[in-house]
Length: 462
Image (cartoon, rainbow, N blue to C red; front, side, top):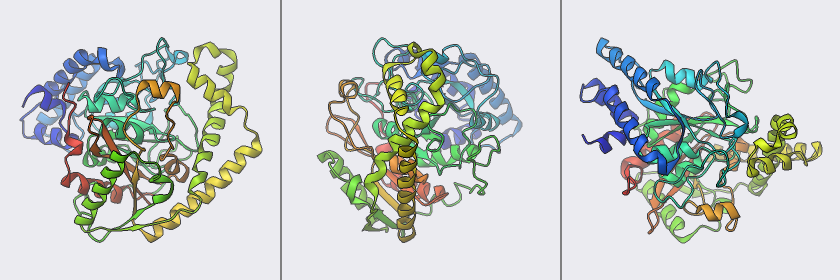
């Protein structure tokens, strides 16, 4: 196994290799740390690399494997955390100068759960500032770059997570998703990411953007790996007031059951509008794959889908409330995009915010009703591939946010690659399901990935 092959192992593959004594956690961790050191100057995926901590974690995992401690499939698996997840004793910046010196005393709940499962902590991954503001040149931290083409964005706000996974710098990562921040980077970087049901995974210890929209979830290279990572992070947490008491499934037990007989809805309006030709062709091919696998595809209608844009009213208003005191006391500590978005949130009236929540409730009810008629929804994650930094900075080619309906509804959605452009950039789609139907969503994603190899492709330049 070459160093590059090791770097692109899946979580399940690494776990198998460890138990067969074909690879050790220490060997894999060292290979990844060397790769991070070599590629990081160009990619800017990490804010902090915890090399000593990683090697200590790897040695502990290796000792556990030698003792026969094989219960956790994550034992010895190297992961990294989006830098809005608090990590005890490790700087957590939120991607902002405001938090540049913050070193939490305790771990976020998800960090604690992954560490308890025996993962190896490689470090903290760059995020758009406070999960909303892409960093401009010359600001406090440089933005992560897309490994498939450094002139293109990896997407946000879990930008470092998408970059690190696509570049072979870690096997799993945390993301957060308030308006597509797990699914966008997964689509742009050719990786796989799950936004679970609202309340499925704890947000305790994660810097909030908008509390009624925030979700935490896993990012990896495959649906199978997301299932393994989700298993260790899901479950009720009394420290998160929105945490659900719904029992946690075994996300692996039916992962290979396929999609034969499943009803998959195609919401053409809103989601499929204004697609770039290569994206439209990739979606047509994906639909053909599901039909060949025995799924029944039918068009569905979500009557109020256009009201999804009210998500920005909710997001900005809640974000302003969270950051209000710092915005007025230390405005210079915020980058231009984050500061502008937060201040805009202060302009909405209580009536406008409540009207947005009313429209949200209507949309959620309609999406829930549609998912009573079909088992899953299939739709593109974006109109096309990752934008260039120039377009992202200037807003020259704005795009419809196809991710916000998943946040407004709180329903689970899996983003996974479904093709590439002629220029070599990934294209991504989503599978969405009913509340707490993560097992079904992951199962369908796994079936697709068993028939395609888009998720196995690697940037040639790395």
